[in-house]
Length: 224
Ligand code: ADE
Image 1: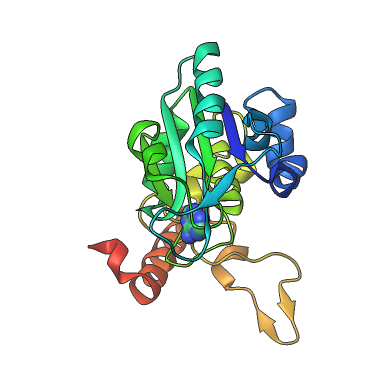
Image 2: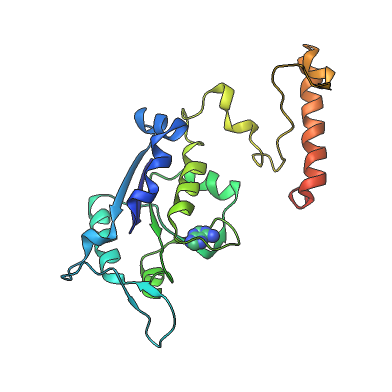
């Protein structure tokens, strides 16, 4: 998979890809992540990427021309399955959307900033709009990192058996059960006996029951 991220702040985005699972996925060549600075595609003297909105109102709007130039250049080099705009008024991200995107070959992520992008970018260039939740961030960069992380960890070979995505919360519409590690007793608080029993059939039954219980209490909407 190849992910191209278009942004006015590439420096804000790089560090999540330079540690742990994402770093290893890139090193193992299971995913390529490329950053493109919109400012490199401006034709104006002062490298302007945004301007006041027509009709008046607070906040700057990212202009279409540099974004169009950047996306067009990428599209000349290869075909893209999706051009995704990160925006608080997009479709709310969930595990099933991440699963779906993880099956794509090449995707572009466009990060908004200030008041967002000129509506014509959305009308003409974008194939999907995604929000990571009902709150407003300063820009789409952190949202792009969240989306990329949730997608990359699903790519075959990225996680090993111990970190398998199959047992993740949400993967079967259930929250994950509680987990424990050593010591078996801490300040009088004991790990559930069953987990120390060595009876893997019973342990699996316990985990399923706990996952269901936790989901019923915390997220009954997932069971509908
Ligand atoms: N940009 C600003 N806020 C956002 C959000 N909640 N999701 C995606 N992109 C955003």
